[in-house]
Image (cartoon, rainbow, N blue to C red):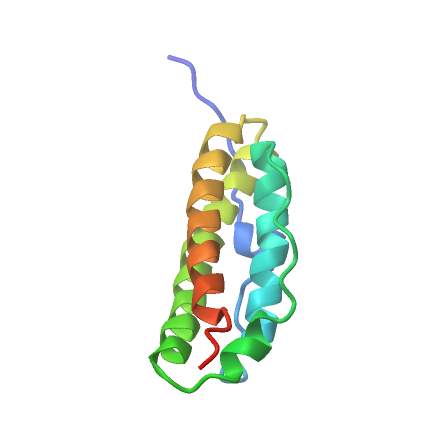
Amino acid sequence: MMQHQTDSFDGALAFDLLRRNADDAGPSLATRWQSLDDAGRVIAALAGEAEPPPEPNFAARIEAIADDRHRLAVQGVEDLSAMIEPGLAALLYVCENGGDARAPALALWREFTASRVALLALAADRGD
């Protein structure tokens, strides 16, 4: 029986894009969004896909609305972060250990882009 030796790996420590600071209430919405964009670029590269276009005004547009869209968008950013952080850590673990991460990266990429599109739709100016 062939056994593979793997080193202990903590993806969150190796690539700390999305980790919250335990000393405060958490990063701002703008900081979280920028972290998600950064993570999206890494996932896109691992999946062999084009990087998502930056969306620097997302947080400002969300902060400008006060209805349920604001609450949904903030929760959506938190949910997307919760999905991306362990997914990205797993992809980086695979890569660091010589594995091919393209297929799982593509699956995570599709989830990321679908969630990102939905969040950007919440932030879209509806003229109201």
